[in-house]
Image 1: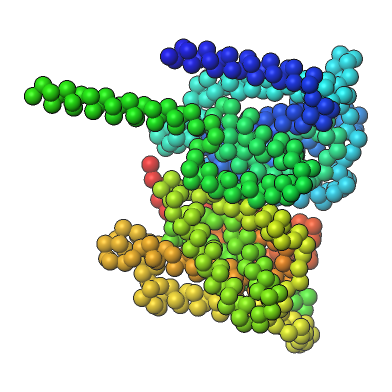
Image 2 (image 1 turned 180 degrees about the vertical axis):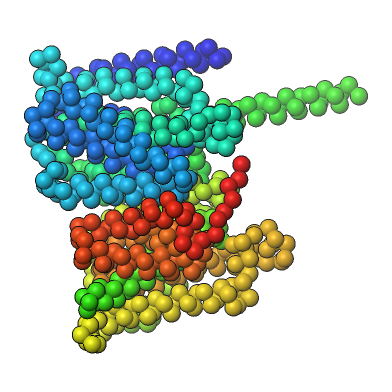
Length: 335
Length: 291
């Protein structure tokens, strides 16, 4: 049964990968762009899922890292530095800032931490908006080029999509490996019971900081890809509201589920973008989304991907009660 | 010096509005462990209710009364029964996420269903300026500060002096012993939600004449109310008042003397300093961590 499930999961993953590979052939230019947009957010939300879903640190400042990644690449490229240096620079800068932001997390927990990270996001956003010499202020930075690899230009939407897909798969592979390593176990222990984790010899200080830093690095990479994808950045997509939306994407997909971000990003960015031009629906998407989040918390607090687990648990409970009934009947017949 | 006093006074007016929202925040937290992320929208919605009643031709006083009743029903009773009660058993974070969803729904619902524009809002006070020893103050600022103080003090007095108020405090301090003593716990918690709704209406009446009624007016307000509550001390209702005033005054002074562009970072900086050195807030008591 377990093996069968594993095989099924593998087959599903392969089928999804194949679909992602051939999809651009059947889509218009905008569709391909939207798919890339989605994958960029999948990378960012994977990072937040590590920080929040696996390690249990409530971060409401993820869009700040996303923005720092985007601005790092944009500013460096405007200074004539290659994208291929900008991308790792974005990841490293975000990693370092993530470590710094982790420090308040050592002092305060849960809701205090959520507001500390939210405040951090406000501060970064204010810098992006006000420091015109660096970030272009509200005018932003435009004409950000797309990179070339080995002389092959990624300028078109299709080649860039395949590049983003490749990065997404690499980042997902790294996260998968990380979660299966002792580090992954330590992160989960930190989430489930920090005091017990500490008494078992897990250095909760280091792991708290690392969970922030690695999550931030993912956002940095996603931001770098985002800058080159949309080719024009301004402070708008990196507000506190965007961070809150990212947090909701983690929760809606299923916090602590590996494939949660795939679903969360689809609901959070692709659907609204897709319905933008549908009259009557566009304006009501967010109110309906918000109301659905409220309802979901009441009926499905662990997110969309918890549905299979719930069904399984219900089946197990039913089988157990049937077994008990059979046993009771047998005992009655015996006596 | 006169500039400083002027800035200080108008800061007090803004701060007292933050204090109203922050007080509701701490009361909800004490009574039911609810962190309400939609607190800013709880201020925004009554402003639009009020506009709705006024546009129906109701006089000011009638509109206020109707708004208070509707707010207690929607933001008090419906919010408690529909969102908080079903989620209470799961702990704090599901309520936080649900109220985030609620704030998105309310904000964008008003935008989609009513208007995305900013609407002027009638002031409770006449448009007058006073000049006292070279310091110019507006009646709006002084009236806002005075009225907000009266409301905060009245809430405090209600909690401290009346039987119902003391019962509510007992519920906040220890729910189990309160119910053993024969206090109707669910009713007391509902009263807290009702008071929060009334405080939100009061904040709406005072803040909207200056900042106009707009679907996103709650965004900054809710965050600052939370910062104010933490700065003052989350488990102390007097802390909300202190925190609100500190944030309002510092913000106004920083905007004038440091940089208007970074005004919104002031609450954050004070918040960071406070949680790093005194996580329980200026007036708060320490809470023990449980395994």
